[in-house]
Length: 514
Image (cartoon, rainbow, N blue to C red; front, side, top):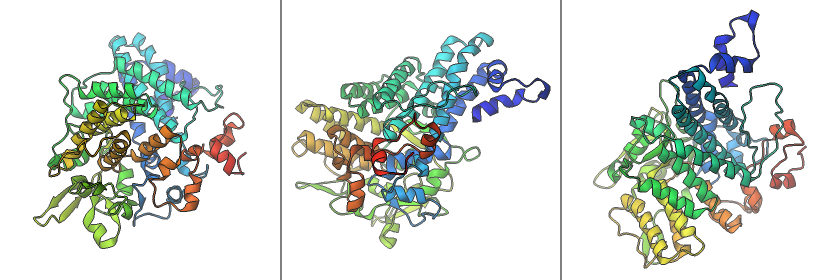
Protein backbone atom coordinates (compact mmCIF):
# COMPACT_ATOMS: atom_id res chain seq x y z
CA UNK A 1 0.00 0.00 0.00
CA UNK A 2 2.85 2.38 0.86
CA UNK A 3 4.41 1.97 -2.59
CA UNK A 4 1.12 2.14 -4.48
CA UNK A 5 -0.02 5.27 -2.66
CA UNK A 6 3.39 6.94 -2.94
CA UNK A 7 3.62 6.22 -6.64
CA UNK A 8 0.10 7.41 -7.31
CA UNK A 9 0.35 10.83 -5.62
CA UNK A 10 1.72 12.65 -8.64
CA UNK A 11 -1.16 11.60 -10.89
CA UNK A 12 -4.06 12.03 -8.47
CA UNK A 13 -4.25 15.83 -8.62
CA UNK A 14 -6.53 15.86 -11.64
CA UNK A 15 -9.79 14.98 -9.89
CA UNK A 16 -11.84 15.17 -13.11
CA UNK A 17 -9.77 12.47 -14.78
CA UNK A 18 -9.13 9.98 -11.99
CA UNK A 19 -8.08 6.56 -13.26
CA UNK A 20 -8.03 3.27 -11.33
CA UNK A 21 -4.97 3.02 -9.10
CA UNK A 22 -3.50 0.11 -11.08
CA UNK A 23 -3.64 2.16 -14.29
CA UNK A 24 -2.01 5.15 -12.56
CA UNK A 25 0.94 3.00 -11.52
CA UNK A 26 1.28 1.26 -14.86
CA UNK A 27 0.75 4.17 -17.24
CA UNK A 28 1.98 7.20 -15.36
CA UNK A 29 4.66 6.08 -12.99
CA UNK A 30 6.78 3.33 -14.55
CA UNK A 31 8.44 5.50 -17.18
CA UNK A 32 12.10 5.91 -16.15
CA UNK A 33 15.04 4.15 -14.56
CA UNK A 34 14.96 6.65 -11.68
CA UNK A 35 11.40 5.65 -10.86
CA UNK A 36 12.27 1.94 -10.93
CA UNK A 37 15.28 2.63 -8.74
CA UNK A 38 13.06 4.44 -6.22
CA UNK A 39 10.93 1.31 -5.81
CA UNK A 40 14.08 -0.80 -5.44
CA UNK A 41 15.14 1.52 -2.63
CA UNK A 42 11.71 1.10 -1.03
CA UNK A 43 12.24 -2.67 -0.99
CA UNK A 44 15.44 -2.27 1.03
CA UNK A 45 13.92 0.43 3.20
CA UNK A 46 11.05 -1.87 4.10
CA UNK A 47 13.51 -4.27 5.73
CA UNK A 48 14.67 -1.53 8.08
CA UNK A 49 11.28 -0.50 9.46
CA UNK A 50 10.89 -1.07 13.17
CA UNK A 51 8.34 -3.88 12.83
CA UNK A 52 10.68 -5.98 10.67
CA UNK A 53 13.74 -5.21 12.77
CA UNK A 54 11.85 -6.36 15.87
CA UNK A 55 10.89 -9.60 14.12
CA UNK A 56 14.45 -10.33 13.04
CA UNK A 57 15.41 -10.29 16.73
CA UNK A 58 12.25 -11.79 18.23
CA UNK A 59 11.99 -14.59 15.65
CA UNK A 60 15.72 -15.27 15.43
CA UNK A 61 17.01 -14.70 18.96
CA UNK A 62 14.44 -14.01 21.68
CA UNK A 63 13.24 -17.59 22.23
CA UNK A 64 16.79 -18.92 22.49
CA UNK A 65 18.97 -19.19 25.59
CA UNK A 66 20.73 -15.90 24.75
CA UNK A 67 18.14 -13.50 26.11
CA UNK A 68 16.01 -12.70 29.12
CA UNK A 69 14.18 -9.62 30.37
CA UNK A 70 16.31 -6.61 31.19
CA UNK A 71 15.71 -4.06 33.90
CA UNK A 72 14.40 -1.60 31.31
CA UNK A 73 11.67 -3.94 30.06
CA UNK A 74 8.44 -1.88 29.79
CA UNK A 75 4.94 -2.96 30.65
CA UNK A 76 3.70 -2.27 27.13
CA UNK A 77 5.77 -5.12 25.65
CA UNK A 78 3.60 -7.85 27.12
CA UNK A 79 3.61 -9.84 23.88
CA UNK A 80 7.41 -10.11 24.00
CA UNK A 81 7.27 -11.15 27.65
CA UNK A 82 4.71 -13.85 26.82
CA UNK A 83 7.05 -15.27 24.18
CA UNK A 84 9.82 -15.50 26.78
CA UNK A 85 7.31 -17.26 29.07
CA UNK A 86 6.49 -19.73 26.24
CA UNK A 87 2.92 -18.49 26.33
CA UNK A 88 2.47 -17.95 22.59
CA UNK A 89 -1.01 -17.60 21.10
CA UNK A 90 -2.05 -16.62 17.55
CA UNK A 91 -3.12 -13.14 18.69
CA UNK A 92 0.40 -12.26 19.89
CA UNK A 93 1.61 -9.20 17.97
CA UNK A 94 4.89 -10.90 17.04
CA UNK A 95 2.95 -13.63 15.23
CA UNK A 96 1.91 -10.93 12.77
CA UNK A 97 3.72 -11.26 9.45
CA UNK A 98 2.16 -8.25 7.71
CA UNK A 99 5.33 -6.11 7.73
CA UNK A 100 7.29 -8.85 5.96
CA UNK A 101 4.57 -9.34 3.37
CA UNK A 102 4.53 -5.58 2.77
CA UNK A 103 8.17 -5.80 1.68
CA UNK A 104 7.32 -8.85 -0.43
CA UNK A 105 4.53 -6.86 -2.12
CA UNK A 106 6.95 -4.03 -2.90
CA UNK A 107 9.26 -6.59 -4.50
CA UNK A 108 6.39 -8.17 -6.46
CA UNK A 109 5.32 -4.73 -7.68
CA UNK A 110 8.83 -4.03 -8.97
CA UNK A 111 9.14 -7.42 -10.68
CA UNK A 112 5.75 -6.95 -12.35
CA UNK A 113 6.18 -3.41 -13.67
CA UNK A 114 9.92 -2.74 -14.07
CA UNK A 115 10.30 -4.71 -17.34
CA UNK A 116 7.99 -2.15 -19.00
CA UNK A 117 10.48 0.64 -18.25
CA UNK A 118 12.91 -0.85 -20.77
CA UNK A 119 10.48 0.24 -23.50
CA UNK A 120 10.02 3.80 -22.19
CA UNK A 121 13.58 4.73 -21.06
CA UNK A 122 16.34 3.99 -23.57
CA UNK A 123 18.98 4.31 -20.84
CA UNK A 124 17.34 1.50 -18.86
CA UNK A 125 18.85 -1.49 -20.62
CA UNK A 126 17.90 -5.13 -20.24
CA UNK A 127 21.21 -5.66 -18.43
CA UNK A 128 20.35 -2.98 -15.87
CA UNK A 129 16.86 -4.45 -15.45
CA UNK A 130 18.27 -7.91 -14.69
CA UNK A 131 20.76 -6.45 -12.21
CA UNK A 132 17.94 -4.62 -10.39
CA UNK A 133 15.76 -7.73 -10.49
CA UNK A 134 18.61 -9.72 -8.92
CA UNK A 135 18.53 -7.43 -5.88
CA UNK A 136 14.76 -7.51 -5.58
CA UNK A 137 14.63 -11.31 -5.85
CA UNK A 138 17.19 -11.53 -3.06
CA UNK A 139 15.27 -9.12 -0.80
CA UNK A 140 12.08 -11.12 -1.36
CA UNK A 141 13.93 -14.40 -0.73
CA UNK A 142 15.29 -13.04 2.57
CA UNK A 143 11.76 -12.14 3.71
CA UNK A 144 10.44 -15.57 2.79
CA UNK A 145 13.40 -17.24 4.51
CA UNK A 146 12.51 -15.49 7.76
CA UNK A 147 8.87 -16.51 7.30
CA UNK A 148 9.48 -20.18 6.49
CA UNK A 149 11.91 -20.61 9.40
CA UNK A 150 9.45 -18.96 11.78
CA UNK A 151 6.10 -20.40 10.65
CA UNK A 152 7.22 -23.43 8.55
CA UNK A 153 4.29 -23.20 6.11
CA UNK A 154 3.33 -19.79 4.69
CA UNK A 155 1.54 -18.47 1.60
CA UNK A 156 3.90 -17.97 -1.33
CA UNK A 157 2.73 -14.81 -3.12
CA UNK A 158 4.64 -13.63 -6.17
CA UNK A 159 2.13 -11.25 -7.75
CA UNK A 160 1.59 -7.67 -6.55
CA UNK A 161 -1.57 -6.45 -4.84
CA UNK A 162 -2.64 -3.92 -7.45
CA UNK A 163 -6.31 -4.49 -8.22
CA UNK A 164 -9.40 -4.65 -6.03
CA UNK A 165 -10.73 -7.46 -8.23
CA UNK A 166 -7.94 -9.82 -7.20
CA UNK A 167 -8.62 -12.80 -5.00
CA UNK A 168 -6.78 -12.10 -1.75
CA UNK A 169 -7.78 -15.33 0.00
CA UNK A 170 -4.70 -17.52 -0.12
CA UNK A 171 -3.70 -20.83 1.42
CA UNK A 172 -0.38 -21.86 2.91
CA UNK A 173 2.27 -23.47 0.73
CA UNK A 174 4.25 -26.37 2.09
CA UNK A 175 7.69 -25.73 3.53
CA UNK A 176 9.15 -27.68 0.61
CA UNK A 177 7.41 -25.47 -1.94
CA UNK A 178 8.50 -22.24 -0.25
CA UNK A 179 12.14 -23.32 0.07
CA UNK A 180 12.22 -24.50 -3.56
CA UNK A 181 10.89 -21.09 -4.66
CA UNK A 182 13.52 -19.33 -2.54
CA UNK A 183 16.36 -21.39 -3.99
CA UNK A 184 15.12 -20.89 -7.55
CA UNK A 185 14.91 -17.12 -7.09
CA UNK A 186 18.36 -16.94 -5.52
CA UNK A 187 19.91 -18.93 -8.37
CA UNK A 188 18.41 -16.44 -10.82
CA UNK A 189 19.59 -13.58 -8.62
CA UNK A 190 23.12 -14.96 -8.40
CA UNK A 191 23.43 -15.16 -12.18
CA UNK A 192 22.70 -11.44 -12.57
CA UNK A 193 23.83 -9.86 -9.29
CA UNK A 194 26.56 -7.24 -9.35
CA UNK A 195 29.97 -7.87 -7.83
CA UNK A 196 30.66 -4.25 -6.92
CA UNK A 197 28.57 -1.10 -6.48
CA UNK A 198 31.50 1.29 -6.20
CA UNK A 199 31.56 2.24 -2.52
CA UNK A 200 31.78 0.27 0.71
CA UNK A 201 28.43 1.56 1.92
CA UNK A 202 26.71 0.45 -1.28
CA UNK A 203 28.57 -2.86 -1.36
CA UNK A 204 27.50 -3.68 2.18
CA UNK A 205 23.98 -2.25 1.87
CA UNK A 206 22.99 -3.97 -1.37
CA UNK A 207 22.76 -7.60 -2.44
CA UNK A 208 26.06 -8.21 -4.20
CA UNK A 209 26.96 -11.67 -5.55
CA UNK A 210 28.59 -12.49 -2.23
CA UNK A 211 25.50 -11.39 -0.31
CA UNK A 212 23.30 -13.61 -2.49
CA UNK A 213 25.75 -16.48 -1.96
CA UNK A 214 25.61 -15.94 1.80
CA UNK A 215 21.80 -16.11 1.84
CA UNK A 216 21.80 -19.15 -0.44
CA UNK A 217 24.38 -20.90 1.78
CA UNK A 218 22.13 -20.24 4.79
CA UNK A 219 19.10 -21.66 2.95
CA UNK A 220 21.05 -24.76 1.91
CA UNK A 221 22.21 -25.28 5.49
CA UNK A 222 18.63 -25.02 6.77
CA UNK A 223 17.46 -27.41 4.03
CA UNK A 224 20.24 -29.91 4.86
CA UNK A 225 21.84 -29.58 1.43
CA UNK A 226 25.28 -29.62 2.99
CA UNK A 227 27.42 -30.07 -0.12
CA UNK A 228 25.69 -27.11 -1.75
CA UNK A 229 26.18 -25.05 1.40
CA UNK A 230 29.91 -25.81 1.39
CA UNK A 231 30.12 -24.83 -2.28
CA UNK A 232 28.44 -21.46 -1.68
CA UNK A 233 30.69 -20.76 1.31
CA UNK A 234 33.75 -21.66 -0.76
CA UNK A 235 32.70 -19.22 -3.47
CA UNK A 236 32.67 -16.45 -0.86
CA UNK A 237 35.82 -17.45 1.00
CA UNK A 238 37.89 -18.23 -2.12
CA UNK A 239 36.64 -15.52 -4.45
CA UNK A 240 39.61 -14.08 -6.40
CA UNK A 241 40.58 -10.55 -5.40
CA UNK A 242 38.07 -10.57 -2.57
CA UNK A 243 38.16 -7.60 -0.22
CA UNK A 244 36.56 -9.62 2.56
CA UNK A 245 38.74 -10.26 5.59
CA UNK A 246 38.26 -10.59 9.32
CA UNK A 247 38.94 -7.44 11.33
CA UNK A 248 41.86 -7.63 13.76
CA UNK A 249 40.77 -8.61 17.31
CA UNK A 250 41.61 -5.31 18.97
CA UNK A 251 39.51 -3.42 16.39
CA UNK A 252 36.76 -5.99 15.88
CA UNK A 253 34.12 -4.46 18.11
CA UNK A 254 34.51 -0.81 17.12
CA UNK A 255 34.87 -1.48 13.37
CA UNK A 256 32.24 -4.19 12.97
CA UNK A 257 29.50 -3.12 15.39
CA UNK A 258 30.05 0.59 16.03
CA UNK A 259 31.29 2.02 12.74
CA UNK A 260 29.74 -0.66 10.55
CA UNK A 261 30.38 -1.65 6.91
CA UNK A 262 33.66 -3.31 7.97
CA UNK A 263 35.91 -5.49 5.84
CA UNK A 264 34.18 -8.62 7.16
CA UNK A 265 30.64 -7.41 6.54
CA UNK A 266 28.82 -8.97 3.58
CA UNK A 267 25.31 -7.52 3.92
CA UNK A 268 23.98 -5.13 6.52
CA UNK A 269 20.91 -2.94 6.74
CA UNK A 270 21.87 0.72 6.59
CA UNK A 271 20.53 3.26 9.07
CA UNK A 272 20.94 7.03 8.97
CA UNK A 273 20.38 9.25 11.99
CA UNK A 274 18.84 11.91 9.77
CA UNK A 275 16.54 9.56 7.83
CA UNK A 276 15.76 6.44 9.81
CA UNK A 277 17.12 5.40 13.19
CA UNK A 278 17.54 1.82 14.32
CA UNK A 279 15.11 2.23 17.20
CA UNK A 280 14.89 -1.52 17.73
CA UNK A 281 18.43 -2.04 19.00
CA UNK A 282 18.23 1.39 20.66
CA UNK A 283 15.34 0.17 22.82
CA UNK A 284 16.02 -3.55 23.20
CA UNK A 285 19.82 -3.46 23.69
CA UNK A 286 20.39 -0.07 25.31
CA UNK A 287 22.06 3.25 24.65
CA UNK A 288 23.94 6.00 26.49
CA UNK A 289 20.65 7.33 27.82
CA UNK A 290 19.64 3.95 29.24
CA UNK A 291 22.50 1.45 29.34
CA UNK A 292 20.29 -1.31 30.68
CA UNK A 293 18.07 -2.13 27.74
CA UNK A 294 14.81 -4.02 27.62
CA UNK A 295 16.64 -7.34 27.11
CA UNK A 296 19.72 -8.78 28.82
CA UNK A 297 22.02 -11.82 28.89
CA UNK A 298 20.91 -14.63 31.26
CA UNK A 299 22.93 -14.95 34.44
CA UNK A 300 23.20 -18.74 34.16
CA UNK A 301 25.13 -18.33 30.88
CA UNK A 302 27.64 -15.91 32.40
CA UNK A 303 29.37 -18.56 34.47
CA UNK A 304 28.90 -22.19 35.33
CA UNK A 305 28.46 -25.39 33.37
CA UNK A 306 26.01 -23.99 30.81
CA UNK A 307 28.05 -20.96 29.83
CA UNK A 308 29.58 -20.97 26.32
CA UNK A 309 32.49 -19.10 27.90
CA UNK A 310 35.03 -20.94 30.06
CA UNK A 311 33.53 -24.20 28.84
CA UNK A 312 35.36 -27.31 30.06
CA UNK A 313 35.87 -30.34 27.85
CA UNK A 314 38.17 -32.89 29.47
CA UNK A 315 41.13 -30.94 30.76
CA UNK A 316 40.69 -28.19 28.18
CA UNK A 317 38.94 -24.87 28.92
CA UNK A 318 37.46 -22.98 25.97
CA UNK A 319 37.26 -19.21 25.84
CA UNK A 320 38.92 -18.57 29.20
CA UNK A 321 40.12 -15.13 28.04
CA UNK A 322 37.63 -14.62 25.25
CA UNK A 323 37.40 -10.99 24.06
CA UNK A 324 33.81 -11.54 22.97
CA UNK A 325 32.74 -12.21 26.55
CA UNK A 326 34.02 -8.74 27.45
CA UNK A 327 33.09 -6.94 24.23
CA UNK A 328 29.54 -8.20 23.76
CA UNK A 329 28.26 -8.17 27.37
CA UNK A 330 28.65 -5.32 29.87
CA UNK A 331 30.48 -7.15 32.65
CA UNK A 332 30.91 -4.45 35.29
CA UNK A 333 27.20 -3.62 35.42
CA UNK A 334 26.33 -7.28 35.86
CA UNK A 335 28.73 -7.73 38.73
CA UNK A 336 26.99 -4.87 40.53
CA UNK A 337 23.36 -5.55 39.69
CA UNK A 338 23.17 -9.19 38.64
CA UNK A 339 21.85 -8.06 35.24
CA UNK A 340 24.31 -8.43 32.37
CA UNK A 341 23.41 -5.82 29.77
CA UNK A 342 23.87 -6.34 26.06
CA UNK A 343 26.76 -4.18 24.84
CA UNK A 344 26.98 -5.41 21.24
CA UNK A 345 25.41 -2.75 18.99
CA UNK A 346 24.59 -0.60 22.05
CA UNK A 347 28.14 0.62 22.71
CA UNK A 348 31.01 2.51 21.12
CA UNK A 349 34.01 0.73 22.60
CA UNK A 350 35.40 -1.04 25.65
CA UNK A 351 38.69 -0.06 27.30
CA UNK A 352 40.63 -2.10 29.84
CA UNK A 353 43.14 -1.10 32.52
CA UNK A 354 46.18 -3.06 33.72
CA UNK A 355 44.00 -4.94 36.22
CA UNK A 356 41.79 -6.11 33.31
CA UNK A 357 38.86 -4.05 34.55
CA UNK A 358 36.67 -2.88 31.66
CA UNK A 359 35.13 0.52 31.11
CA UNK A 360 32.28 0.77 28.61
CA UNK A 361 31.40 3.73 26.41
CA UNK A 362 27.81 3.73 25.18
CA UNK A 363 26.51 5.25 21.97
CA UNK A 364 23.86 7.90 21.37
CA UNK A 365 23.54 7.02 17.69
CA UNK A 366 21.97 3.85 16.31
CA UNK A 367 23.87 1.16 14.41
CA UNK A 368 23.48 -0.70 11.15
CA UNK A 369 22.13 -4.23 11.47
CA UNK A 370 24.40 -6.99 10.15
CA UNK A 371 22.63 -9.80 8.31
CA UNK A 372 25.73 -11.68 7.10
CA UNK A 373 29.44 -11.33 7.78
CA UNK A 374 32.48 -13.44 6.99
CA UNK A 375 32.78 -15.21 10.34
CA UNK A 376 29.18 -16.43 9.94
CA UNK A 377 30.09 -17.94 6.55
CA UNK A 378 33.21 -19.62 7.96
CA UNK A 379 31.15 -21.27 10.69
CA UNK A 380 28.35 -22.20 8.26
CA UNK A 381 30.89 -24.14 6.22
CA UNK A 382 32.23 -25.82 9.36
CA UNK A 383 28.70 -26.84 10.35
CA UNK A 384 27.87 -28.17 6.88
CA UNK A 385 31.06 -30.27 6.76
CA UNK A 386 30.34 -31.77 10.16
CA UNK A 387 26.65 -32.37 9.43
CA UNK A 388 27.41 -34.61 6.45
CA UNK A 389 26.01 -38.13 7.09
CA UNK A 390 29.46 -39.69 7.40
CA UNK A 391 32.14 -36.99 7.42
CA UNK A 392 35.70 -38.18 6.95
CA UNK A 393 38.50 -37.32 9.37
CA UNK A 394 39.78 -34.88 6.76
CA UNK A 395 36.42 -33.10 6.68
CA UNK A 396 36.21 -33.00 10.48
CA UNK A 397 39.75 -31.60 10.65
CA UNK A 398 38.83 -28.96 8.08
CA UNK A 399 35.74 -28.03 10.11
CA UNK A 400 37.87 -27.72 13.25
CA UNK A 401 40.39 -25.56 11.40
CA UNK A 402 37.56 -23.24 10.34
CA UNK A 403 36.34 -22.94 13.92
CA UNK A 404 39.88 -22.09 14.99
CA UNK A 405 39.86 -19.08 12.62
CA UNK A 406 37.12 -17.28 14.54
CA UNK A 407 38.01 -18.79 17.90
CA UNK A 408 41.69 -17.82 17.80
CA UNK A 409 40.88 -14.24 16.79
CA UNK A 410 39.14 -13.72 20.14
CA UNK A 411 41.38 -16.08 22.13
CA UNK A 412 44.83 -15.11 20.88
CA UNK A 413 46.49 -16.07 24.17
CA UNK A 414 44.99 -19.56 24.13
CA UNK A 415 46.25 -22.57 22.23
CA UNK A 416 44.32 -23.67 19.18
CA UNK A 417 41.53 -26.21 19.59
CA UNK A 418 43.17 -29.55 18.84
CA UNK A 419 41.87 -32.62 17.01
CA UNK A 420 43.17 -34.83 19.80
CA UNK A 421 40.34 -33.42 21.96
CA UNK A 422 37.75 -32.49 19.30
CA UNK A 423 37.88 -35.67 17.26
CA UNK A 424 34.34 -36.93 16.62
CA UNK A 425 31.35 -35.68 14.67
CA UNK A 426 29.26 -35.21 17.83
CA UNK A 427 31.95 -33.32 19.76
CA UNK A 428 32.72 -30.98 16.86
CA UNK A 429 29.01 -30.35 16.17
CA UNK A 430 28.56 -29.12 19.73
CA UNK A 431 31.77 -27.07 19.54
CA UNK A 432 30.50 -25.32 16.39
CA UNK A 433 27.20 -24.54 18.10
CA UNK A 434 29.08 -22.99 21.06
CA UNK A 435 31.39 -21.05 18.76
CA UNK A 436 28.48 -19.70 16.74
CA UNK A 437 26.85 -18.65 20.02
CA UNK A 438 29.99 -16.84 21.16
CA UNK A 439 30.67 -15.18 17.82
CA UNK A 440 27.11 -14.26 16.82
CA UNK A 441 25.57 -13.32 20.18
CA UNK A 442 22.53 -11.03 19.80
CA UNK A 443 22.74 -11.00 15.98
CA UNK A 444 19.41 -12.79 15.44
CA UNK A 445 20.97 -16.19 14.74
CA UNK A 446 20.77 -18.40 17.84
CA UNK A 447 17.16 -19.67 17.66
CA UNK A 448 17.61 -20.68 14.04
CA UNK A 449 20.92 -22.39 14.93
CA UNK A 450 19.12 -24.44 17.58
CA UNK A 451 16.26 -25.16 15.18
CA UNK A 452 18.71 -26.74 12.73
CA UNK A 453 19.87 -29.08 15.50
CA UNK A 454 16.28 -30.20 16.14
CA UNK A 455 15.46 -30.48 12.44
CA UNK A 456 18.37 -32.86 11.86
CA UNK A 457 17.20 -35.25 14.54
CA UNK A 458 13.47 -34.56 14.29
CA UNK A 459 13.37 -34.18 18.09
CA UNK A 460 12.23 -30.99 19.79
CA UNK A 461 14.08 -32.06 22.92
CA UNK A 462 17.40 -31.58 21.14
CA UNK A 463 16.57 -27.87 21.05
CA UNK A 464 14.94 -27.48 24.45
CA UNK A 465 17.88 -29.28 26.03
CA UNK A 466 19.80 -26.02 25.55
CA UNK A 467 17.13 -23.92 27.29
CA UNK A 468 18.09 -24.72 30.86
CA UNK A 469 15.90 -22.02 32.41
CA UNK A 470 12.57 -23.51 31.20
CA UNK A 471 10.03 -24.76 33.68
CA UNK A 472 8.47 -28.17 33.21
CA UNK A 473 5.27 -26.65 31.83
CA UNK A 474 7.19 -24.43 29.41
CA UNK A 475 9.27 -27.40 28.24
CA UNK A 476 6.07 -29.38 27.67
CA UNK A 477 4.72 -26.60 25.43
CA UNK A 478 7.80 -27.08 23.23
CA UNK A 479 7.78 -30.89 23.26
CA UNK A 480 6.76 -31.29 19.61
CA UNK A 481 8.55 -30.06 16.51
CA UNK A 482 5.50 -28.08 15.35
CA UNK A 483 5.51 -26.32 18.73
CA UNK A 484 8.88 -24.78 17.86
CA UNK A 485 7.29 -22.72 15.09
CA UNK A 486 5.07 -19.69 15.62
CA UNK A 487 1.29 -19.84 15.09
CA UNK A 488 -0.28 -18.25 12.02
CA UNK A 489 -1.69 -14.83 13.03
CA UNK A 490 -5.31 -15.22 14.09
CA UNK A 491 -6.42 -12.11 12.21
CA UNK A 492 -5.28 -13.59 8.90
CA UNK A 493 -7.01 -16.89 9.63
CA UNK A 494 -10.25 -15.06 10.44
CA UNK A 495 -10.12 -13.12 7.16
CA UNK A 496 -9.05 -16.08 5.00
CA UNK A 497 -11.05 -18.86 6.69
CA UNK A 498 -11.36 -21.70 5.66
CA UNK A 499 -8.62 -21.45 3.01
CA UNK A 500 -5.85 -20.45 5.45
CA UNK A 501 -5.51 -22.87 8.36
CA UNK A 502 -3.54 -22.80 11.60
CA UNK A 503 -0.22 -24.55 12.17
CA UNK A 504 -0.99 -28.08 13.42
CA UNK A 505 0.39 -27.70 16.94
CA UNK A 506 -1.78 -24.69 17.71
CA UNK A 507 -4.88 -26.26 16.17
CA UNK A 508 -4.53 -29.09 18.67
CA UNK A 509 -3.85 -26.97 21.75
CA UNK A 510 -5.97 -23.85 21.24
CA UNK A 511 -9.71 -24.44 21.20
CA UNK A 512 -10.79 -20.92 20.29
CA UNK A 513 -9.68 -21.20 16.66
CA UNK A 514 -12.39 -20.66 14.12
